[in-house]
Image (tube, rainbow, N blue to C red; front, side, top):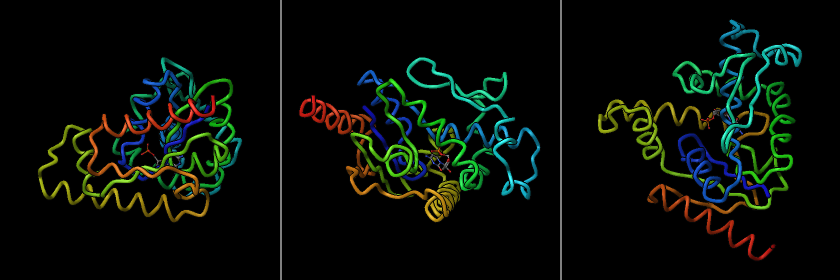
Length: 225
Ligand code: DC
């Protein structure tokens, strides 16, 4: 069974997907982590920004970025280096949206994300998991939340002062900029899957949003066996 959770930056998809997977005994595939790993590798290889649009499949292959199943999720590798702990840096944050907008990158990752689903029950989160990568997923969710709430969550996640109005305002700006790039790019933009269940998490606690999704999936399983 495949469960997809899509939504904008900071809507709580990845942590929610991880907790839902844990509760259901499914594997968790955080697709954003794959885009981040590739971005880290492109930056580490020193490929200049002006060459990104002409990146070839062979160049992407050479970065040797891959996810290896570990625990209930995946660890991300570039060649022999485990980069799981390095992909949420400010530098990767600033560059991941343009890298994820490259058609060659999306094509390259499509097969890899799909093969991760073979033979396992999966909860996966991202921007296009329900629309492009797994259009036939059994259950799809679309998470939204106010930009201010998402910005506050991001600051807290990084251990920064979420009550400082200036920091909050600049984080809202960054989140809205990412939303704009992710939803206006030509290939696989962030879009609500037509058959998704909507979940506005602005006023929900983490446990509540996890609980709502788990309840939907359990009900689906009860009905479909
Ligand atoms: O969810 P996140 O912040 O880790 O995602 C990082 C970036 O990757 C984000 O800018 C959008 C992109 N992304 C994407 O384009 N498609 C996905 N399925 C997942 C992430």
